Amino acid sequence: MTNHKLVLHYAPRSRASTIRVLLDELGAEYDLKIHNVRERALETEAFLAINPLGKVPVLQDGETIITESVAIALHAADLYSQAGLTPASGDSQRGNYLRWMVFYAESFEPAVVDKAAGFEMPQLLAPYCSYDKVMEALAAQLRNAPYILGDRFSVVDILWGSALRWTLMFDLVPDWPVFADYAERITGRPSFQRVFEEEAALAAVQDESVESHPA
Ligand SMILES: N[C@@H](CCC(=O)N[C@@H](CS)C(=O)NCC(=O)O)C(=O)O
Image (cartoon, rainbow, N blue to C red; front, side, top):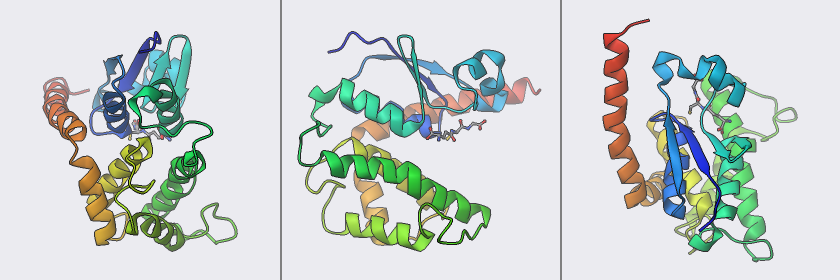
């Protein structure tokens, strides 16, 4: 238990879904602030005061505002370390855990987004070397064990399971069985399935609201 008052700014079918699953897996108590992206709710003055980039997820922890999925995940994982999903400082897996959390934001996402946009970044300029190298490094990490940290399921798997699910869906990563099997293993967990179900219903309500009150 913590006495932190958490509020998650969330929109269905977005990176905020991953954080919702993560908070549920950690057993965190939090309030959900639901936004409708199609109603341009993230472009309002009130929301831009929270995140000037106009993006979700955002986690408010009391007076502190945390943006960026990886920062939110690290913060929540440490707050709820008693859930047993966070290698603590001093744990022999802590470095590996941090490596793969940051690799997601620093190398994987830029590589995937550049590829989707058709940019071929020169290796010397690209902080991730090359798209192919990123994919090979990730596949090598996943090939010999069920989870990123070997036999131990941790917070970092929530991030990667979710990322591989949506990047496979949009053909942004190679359709290698190692990626598909891993994504299925992680997102088949009841925590993911519950959020997917709830947000399918919520997205339908949001879509209907946009269609009945077009801008
Ligand atoms: N770097 C950010 C990316 C956040 C982001 O791209 N969020 C998307 C949803 S997946 C968003 O809010 N899009 C709404 C918009 O741009 O209007 C993170 O990791 O949290």
